[in-house]
Image (cartoon, rainbow, N blue to C red; front, side):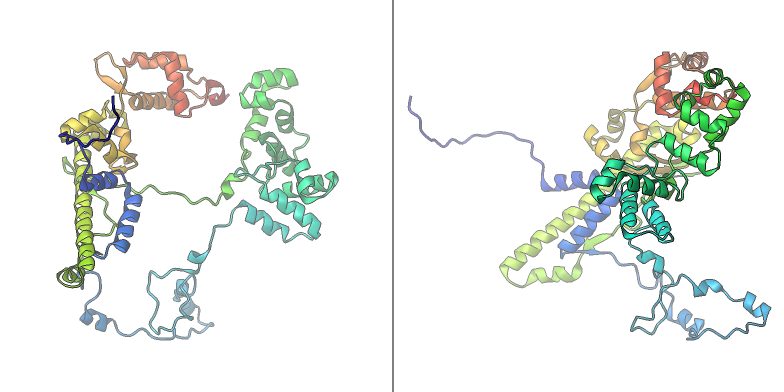
Length: 477
């Protein structure tokens, strides 16, 4: 048998993704923030793309209206200090937190939406900055400052000291006595309980700040911390040989303390959820609208299209290719908007009770149900709902929230989702007697009376997912 190279012609059918389909799939799975970045990048790279400009006169005042407003005086009128009526009429907001245009070569007044001085801060001050500011008011030597800065630099987000005395001695080069003294000094700063090495130590520092070192509350935290965490007050009263009523009062005092003193000084920016879709109810009909605010509206550049008729062949080929890419992007963007709207309209039809009555009336729904209703593949529905949010009359929800399988069945034969069962559990817990909270078995019995049969361990799983404490932690004698 000889081994040789040969050429053969073969006819075969293959499923290939065109560039237009790839572009549509890529845009469909992007959320609103990612889409804005992708469109801005395309605007910067493609000369045949441009942003649609608003019509002239739509947002600005006409010339006649501008003339009627008159010219702004260059200097504020002088106010006599001995006239209380004139002083009261001054709008003092004009003198604070305004953008300073003194360094500009322009003579016109700054715009009303110009940034303030506070907008130029690089970062918001947090716990470390607050503690460092307190150190500036203390007369410390440079070696002591180095130790204090090391301690502050090793605080975690909760305000706890995430190291030990040996680390301080090794890194700073000080003695153990100096390290312990400076750690104690930092622990005496505000907020109370900062630089503790555990929740227990943080609570003890706060009680010490209040002068309660000899109180029963101090003893509960120091000697019975685990029992206190489990709300086993009867056992504490028996072992401490103290009346139960006094133990309850001391436990109430400890409950008022802050277990994580550094949380309120967190400088992490809050990430607000911006909905991708809006659902409005007008009379008896729900209207779906895409959130296109602050998204660039794209169109082909008429000015650069005129360059297609002349110039060198290489430049013309490049511009033709960019025009094709721009048109594909615009078509893919329109496909994205229409697909998301169709998917959202299908969700409204299949989850009508939720939009009418609220979260407790959501029904089991899977991707194939919506895909069959819209007439697309399941993967298209999955991409259209991935990392996207909708604002409804009942609040903002992730689109994936509306998809869930049946977790239980009622006596009437209706399938119920896990979210519906959780809403029932929350309702029962809110109505319970604080002195006798409902156990997982009792919750299962109440659900069974409502026609929902669930095992006790399933109820316990849902309760933990809802972050509802156990019976001991919910009991209030």
